[in-house]
Image (cartoon, rainbow, N blue to C red; front, side):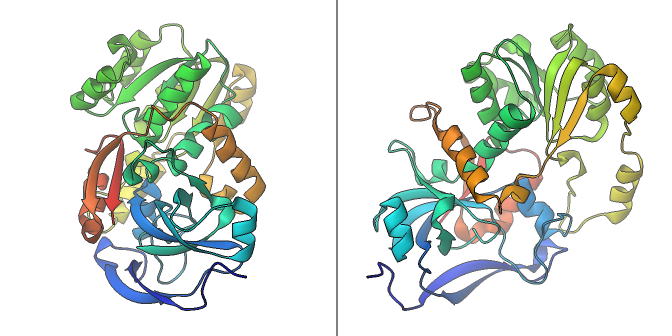
Length: 353
């Protein structure tokens, strides 16, 4: 017998009418069908914000759905209903606290998802912390272990170290015995990292005019791996700092984040035309690698993504929850996105439903 009834349920959901402007995002009410046999229906309690949300809303994300869509890649909440297969495979029950991923659609208070994309929230974590973990954690683990192949004792540069991915990356690197060099965008973020146990001499401020010299002082012998979600003028000095055998892992371009409700296409074109170029033949002689990825393209590789999540959750997270820097109410999603877009956030920005 199915654990999901056949009735539709009312929900609230944020809809982006079409990509291109934040002003096209609106909160509406609609109906959601009962979950299918391999789905779980979640009463959402928190949604995590990601750079991909903003780039998709502004029409600058390659994976943006065509037409109207609901933003959001991650959420947490309580199970409201289960399909037969989902219940048999997971052993979950109605009322269990879970965190999950979705390929868009998280900005809602009720969602149906494949059972393979949810995990239980550690008992000591809040819903907000649960919604701040999976997308960031999977990005960090994939960048560090699968592409960066970080080894004990190696030196790793972490850009945006006070952000969601950055903070989790620092934790993972500490767990594996690597030496992290942390780059942040403002002095207050230095204070945050120091308060979380990062040595002051391993943190420096991101300043385009002095970046190469600052990096040279922080890592005089060079770096083995660079984890970069900023790109822009910092790419070349970071790549140059790689030692022979170094790996540059690129998974974002926050430096190209538009500042207003709509993209400034002239500014973006200028940035695009000035983007750095690498000579593949020089990469061979220098023995350096550039590896780039977008986690959303792993979405259809269910077994691989599920295995990555299991590996990530094997770390001791119970007493090391993700850092939530600011919480907005669900109804204030546009305000939350504008704040996130400003670059002032630390840790994770979350909507509380």
